[in-house]
Structure formats: C-alpha cells, structure tokens
Image (tube, rainbow, N blue to C red):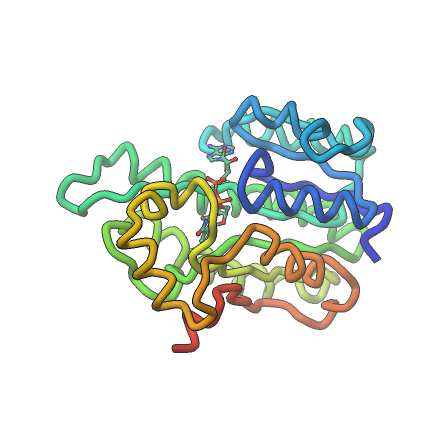
Length: 248
Ligand SMILES: NC(=O)c1ccc[n+]([C@@H]2O[C@H](COP(=O)([O-])OP(=O)(O)OC[C@H]3O[C@@H](n4cnc5c(N)ncnc54)[C@H](O)[C@@H]3O)[C@@H](O)[C@H]2O)c1
C-alpha cells in the first residue's frame, strides 16, 4: 500500500522523523527528507537504505526562500511527484513567558506553523492535479493542554490542530486527506532536559496511563495508516499517540 509511493518528510534527520523515514523505507517508499542538520546526509547509511530511495536535502524551514528551494529540490528528486507529505520538523524552547525572546517566539512559529502551511499548499497543488494525496502533520498533547514554560510551542501546536482541520475541509473533495498525529511524551532529544532529570522523568512516566514514555517507533504505525488507502475516508482528525495521557 505504501510501496512505490513518493514521500516528503521534514525533520527526518533524527527523532520521530528518523523513525518515519526508516518505516516508510521498509514499506517500499521513495523518500525525500528536508532537515536543517548535516545528519540528514547520513540517513541512508544509518538506516541501511539504498541511496536512490532516500534523497537528503539540507534546508532551513524558518526561511521561506530555503523552504521553497528545498521543496522544489525534493519534487525534482522524487521525479516530479508527491503522494505523501509528512510535516514532522519542529522545535521547542522551555522558558518562562517573562524571559521568552521574540526571536525564539518567531522562529518556533515559523518552523512549527508557517512552514507547515506553506509546504502543505505547495504539495496540495500537485496532489489536487492527481486527485489524491496524504498530508500528515505533527500536533502534540500540547495542542490540547497548555503545558508549562512552553507558551510558543503550545501556541504553535494548537494552531496545527486547527490548520489540519481547516485544510482538510478545503481539500477533501480533491481526494487529499489532511490529518495530524499528537504524540505525548516521547523519548527523543526534544525532551533531553526532562529525561536527564530523573525525578521529573519518573513523575512524567507515572502520569502516563501506559506507565512508560513513548518511542519513535510508536508513531510510525499510525503514520503508515494515515499514509495508506486504509485511511481514505479519514480526514481532519488529530490522533493522539500518547499512552493514554489525553484520555485521563
Ligand atoms: N518528542 C516529543 O515528545 C514530541 C511530543 C509531541 C509532538 N512532537 C512533535 O513531533 C515532531 C518531531 O519531534 P522530535 O521529538 O522528533 O524532535 P527532534 O528535535 O528530535 O527532531 C526535530 C527535527 O526537526 C528538525 N528541524 C528543526 N528546525 C528545523 C528547521 N528550521 N528546518 C528544518 N528542519 C528543522 C531538526 O533538525 C530535527 O531533525 C515535532 O513536530 C514535535 O513538535 C514531539
């Protein structure tokens, strides 16, 4: 169902995005990956993939010119087609609202929201012509709850929840499904500070009904479902992958 599909993943150099690249590669997809990190060039090697199935592109999604250039390069590498767009790149800064710099606020909103909007419509122009396409965004449990010392991040993820619904309404009639995954507490470098603090890390795990942090692999199955024809009548949804946190 995923075999032969042309996929663009942002933020695939590490964390959840890396797990997605690995899973979609194993499912037979050809994948372009946009990331700001040089690590993106080691992707084929680190997942043991054939070079012609993974196309690494280094780009900064907070800069519109770089975003558009990276998108065009991705489409070129994918032979002019895109079936699935996964907007996974994101960043957080944990800081009190009083001390938050406007520079950080703008960068978080640029990467977590504006880039998702622009990439989605660039991809949707192509998907509309082929009358099919899947767009998968990364929301968060902080799309629903406010979090602490994460004003810019939770604002951005709240926006992703609404953007996902809004775009799904516009594009459903063209056979394009737009959905989002809302991960809970996942074991990635985004949470290094929390994980390093053994007291807080244990407190977090205690609050999760599943009693454990999530792993990058936990999101991959849901992403494969949302990318496959099995979800062709599913659009505008936000699926939590959080070990039960939002159900408490
Ligand atoms: N880890 C969690 O607990 C968690 C929870 C909820 C939601 N999420 C969301 O899932 C997604 C992936 O998170 P993760 O934990 O894998 O994070 P991560 O920090 O491990 O990976 C994020 C990736 O995005 C890339 N990126 C950041 N800024 C970029 C830019 N300007 N241009 C291009 N690439 C850029 C990074 O280089 C990195 O490879 C994010 O959208 C995040 O908000 C994560």
